Image (cartoon, rainbow, N blue to C red; front, side, top):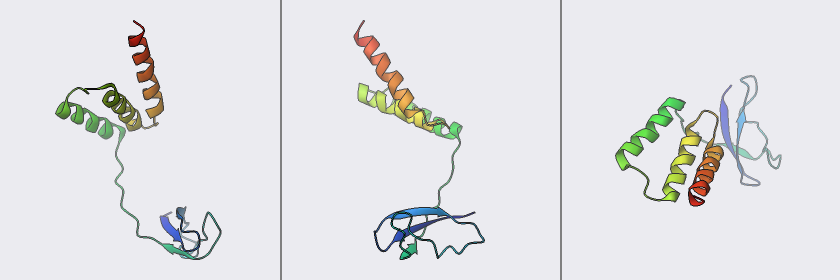
Amino acid sequence: MPVYEYRCGSCGKAFNVLVPQTEDADSQPCKFCGSTEVSRQVSRFRRGTSEEDRFDKITDRLERVGEPESASELREMARDAGAAADEDLADEFEEMFEADMDEDTNR
């Protein structure tokens, strides 16, 4: 089933719809206001990447840039590493980072 992107002419909001091939892709109502004044938009192509590819990209960035110079850069790297996981762990990685920072401060 293809995913189509639409923009509502009434409320102006954009939305996506998974449209079965048995339905008319041009007759989808707005998910927000119910209007039928919608226009199908040109979708961008998105290439999926594996978890391994995403971690390789972070590793390459570390090798190119080196160690983060500040706590905020280190926090950002922790979030990026968490987001690279198949199950988005960005919040959990940031919490672990904060716990480590608090522990180091209390020593």
